[in-house]
Amino acid sequence: MNHITYRPIGSIRTPFKKQAGMPIQPSGAKGVRGTIKIKKDYIGGLKDLEGFSHLVLIYHFHLSKEYDLMATPFLDDQPRGVFATRAPRRPNSIGLSIVKLNAVEGDILEIENVDIVDGTPLLDIKPYVPEFDAQTEVKTGWLAEVDERVKQAKSDNRFNSNKKV
Image (cartoon, rainbow, N blue to C red; front, top):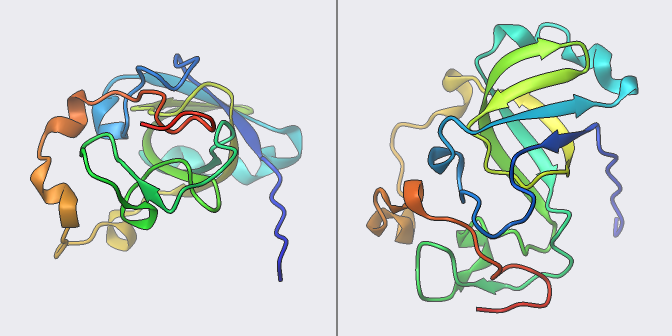
């Protein structure tokens, strides 16, 4: 199998019109609100979602056109293997964020703690369930040294297709 096709189920709307200056993770986007507009064919899948406080969003890094196997992350100054980072320039440009769900109104989801660029195509939604998702004995590799910096760090243009830092 060499070719896989995904169809967006909706679009994520946020205050971030460009990558530069936006938070790099949801923990740095506390209180930032956005919305998701679900396509008409998928509205039925929203049934029972309002009972969850948080969602896992799986989306396409639509501004990332190429990939690098080495990436210099926002929180470090040395190149790391792309699979040891959350850099958007990946072999498969798939992103993941856990956001707070504030409301479900028809085909619109109101969300919070958003670290996603405006207009990002949404591939899937999964409910965040601590019993399934939260791990207790965790190692964070090189990230163990960055502490609280993630809450203040902002994106720049280092992962744009034609820019390298």
